[in-house]
Image (cartoon, rainbow, N blue to C red; front, side, top):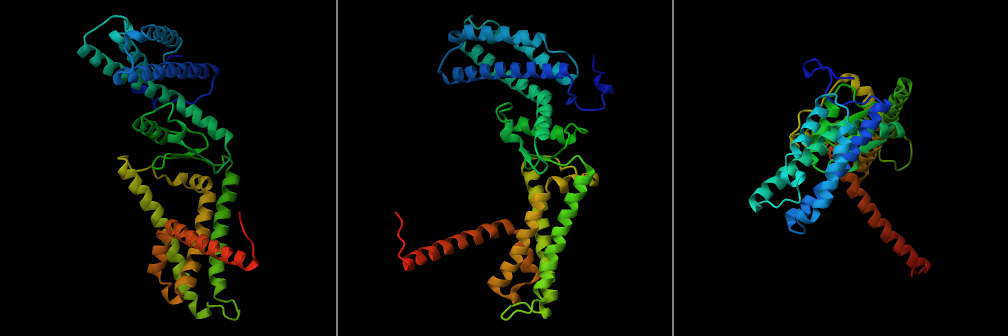
Length: 355
């Protein structure tokens, strides 16, 4: 079926409908990309002087014939397919691709070599635009909620250029619902799986709230424990609670600032912040959020025990929350070193030797 003119299109050229014909088309496109990438590897060796076009003329001719057969089976529809076909038609005018056995001047060959490499690069990108969304949906369908796809690592072989992968990832963010069951975090190059069942999403959000309430109850309850030698007293409740709120604010600010910095460093537009996506984000990242809450609780008690209650100020707690990941790494390293020393001393006392 012929796609409507570009002026009448209401969605970007990323198709995710799973009909048999479209699946076969995607397979042909991926085969075409494989042919082009293998050709690109030969061109790279020609540039470095490891081989010549004439020595690979037979291979290039076979690649051209195989690619022509695949291109003839690709059904037109949408501007992305049209761009791809136009680039392939341009390749047929390139003397190194059309007549590799014909000798040409060194300067003309270098110009044709660079042009051919650029054309192959464009085909790789267009094939990625047409095939990757469906691949992402397949991965998400097989994944459990809470898992994520590291987009750049997974599709590096299919789209070697990081800038091209970033463009495709941006298409996935901006396009209306090209991804089913996934939230795209373009700044980090991750696609998170969320529950498509609203009831499961609600349960996970309630679990996050329950964890937050339980952690807050632990902070308050610590000031009411009547244990000999326990450092927390009821008069410390307001300061300890203020510290807990400050450390949570620090964690939130750190996440927000980190996301903005990554977006700016990569030269991207600001990420889309739709309130309707908030339940999906909370569900997809519920495990990470719960872990952050528990780490914040550990950080607060660590600050109190390590430096004394008089140092549990809102500012100190905020800084602990902001640098929580680094502090956990420092604390864990210190604990591991102390544990190793204690274990070594205990072995000496017990007379235990290791080989």
